[in-house]
Image 1 (cartoon, rainbow, N blue to C red):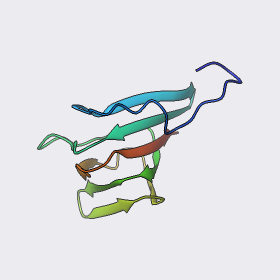
Image 2: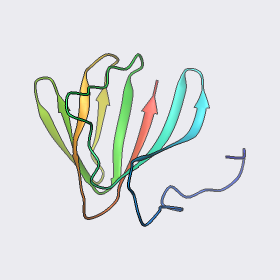
Image 3: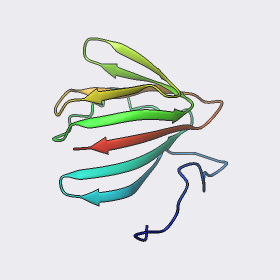
Length: 107
């Protein structure tokens, strides 16, 4: 992305999503901002994210479920959550009927 250029978070979304899409929007130590697009994808069985950075996630469109070691959280459009560093989590479910667009800020 060029500095000072206009972009739209909802543009260039493929109609077929055989896999989740992870696109870095901005990266500058210690912050990284990603757009994630899901449609029916979930974490593989037994896989857990265990990240060195904290992660703020907001669902801009669609719906999903995040699973933690002790709970599952449903996320709908507009919902957000802060995941602290090394808090194990996984994507349990994303809507198969529509794209789920996430904005993730790693810090």
